[in-house]
Image 1: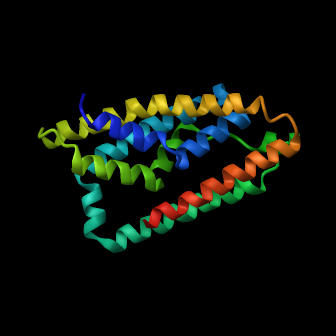
Image 2: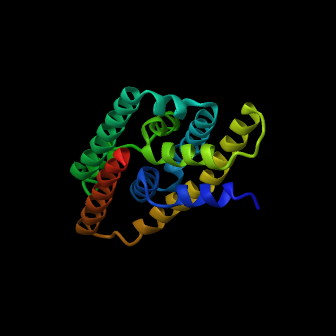
Length: 193
């Protein structure tokens, strides 16, 4: 088996912004409503993996100012989402009507500021090349990331949906929401590692 696949699986399955957001979306909105988010993440990580393979990550490494701007934007966006989740009141029927799961495009765009996806794709591009042409390597990484991450996303959204059955009181929802918001905020620190 190509060692790229277990590396990508381990990198994408472990907790990070996507895992936290998909689990939360599954719990709050249900599996069906989370499907655009699932497919958006799978497509977005494929684009990032291809971009890493084509040298975008090398450009970011070569120009520290650009990398710093991206890191600050990523951390800010993640902290904004965490604070929004922290303040939300999902047990309140009015709040549930206002809150909505990510759309496909929002999930794709989030990958551009997701530090974990960049870190895993950079490591994969640097360490798991198969010696093909630039385009072949980009397609190989893109398909590995998208294909594996689709199943990872399906798992975490389903886990969140199943977890919702245990969250039967407003207090339980509040604990879940604040725990997920805290975990998401902690992932902002990954940006600077």
